[in-house]
Amino acid sequence: MHKSSPSKSKSLYSLFFSLLLISSCCVFKTDPPDLRITGQNYPSSVNANQRFNLLFTVGNFSSGDCDADNTTQGVVNLKMTNQLTGAVQVNNNQTLNPLANNSTQSFDFSVIIGPENAGTYDMVFTVDPNNTTGSVNTTNNTQTGVIVVN
Image 1 (cartoon, rainbow, N blue to C red):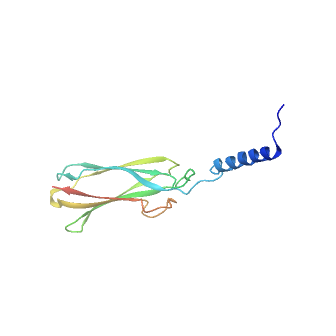
Image 2: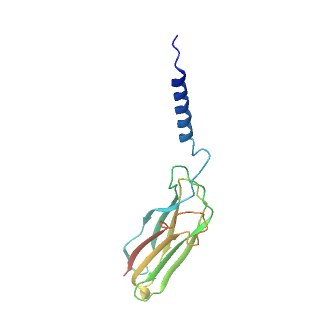
Image 3: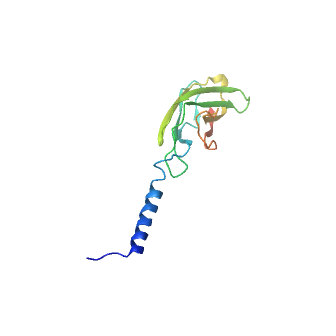
């Protein structure tokens, strides 16, 4: 029967517990939530009086090694402003539900702009504009674009 030396057993024991601590650090802790825009789909141009949809997907993902905490409820906002006149044509809010780690929520804004308001529009989609969800990184909460209404 072969016996291992005390120093070899102590080294293996230390290595085992070090690996256990490293791998279980997330068992007892979570990272702050981080809401991000993970997808969008909208046309670059539409005809006046034509209904068009602006689709956005928001997700909650950790920016660290552990799972993200759940977010609290908030809102998302879509604003469309005429570049020529500065008039805000669309300013809609929808409810952002609390999101668990790696969860997403999709938003579908349906819009019609009449011929009297044809022009080029700046579009801004903002996640949690009032900072109420607990998301720690607000630099990835806005999607901008341009839509031409002919």
